[in-house]
Length: 209
Image (tube, rainbow, N blue to C red; front, top):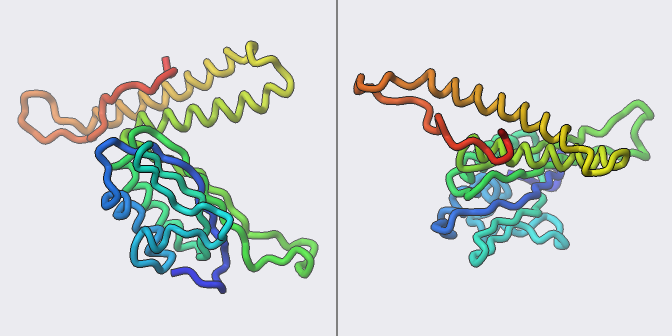
C-alpha cells in the first residue's frame, strides 16, 4: 500500500480497447492490483489519481475504452502489481495496446543533492493484448512511429519505406520463432495427447509480411 513517505510517485498512462462483452465487474477485477495497491476497496474508490488534474482511471462503456492517466505513491513492489494487471487486461483486450509507466524519485532534491547524485527515475513500457501476435503488433506500430518521427527530421516520409520494411522483417522473424517454439510443445496429431501453447499458429500481425 502506498503512502506519502513512499520513495516513488508512479504514473501509469495508456488506453486499451476492450472486447464488446466486457463488463465493469470484469474490468474492476482485472485492475484490482492497481486500486488495491492504492489502498482502495473498489475501482470506483481507487480510480482517482493522486493528482487532481489527472483524470485517473476511466472506462468509456459506449466506446469500450479503458483510459488510464493515474498516479500513485509507492515503491519497487508496485512492479508486481503491474505484472498482475497486465495478465488481467490480456483477457479483456480486443487488440494490443501499450501502457507507459514512469517512476519518479520522490526523495530526490536536485538543489540539495550532491553534484554526482542522480535521481532513481525509471520508465517502463508495458504491452497487453489478447494474443502474442496482437502484442507484437502494438510493439511494431509503436517502434515504427518512433523511428519515423526521428528520421523525418532528416528524410522525407516517402523515403522511409525501406526502413519500415526492415522493422517488419525483424518482427516477422520474432513472430515465426514464437510460433515455432509453441509448435514444439504440441503433441503430434492423432496421439490423443493434450496440446501445448495456447496461442500457437495464431494469425500473423498486420504489416509483417
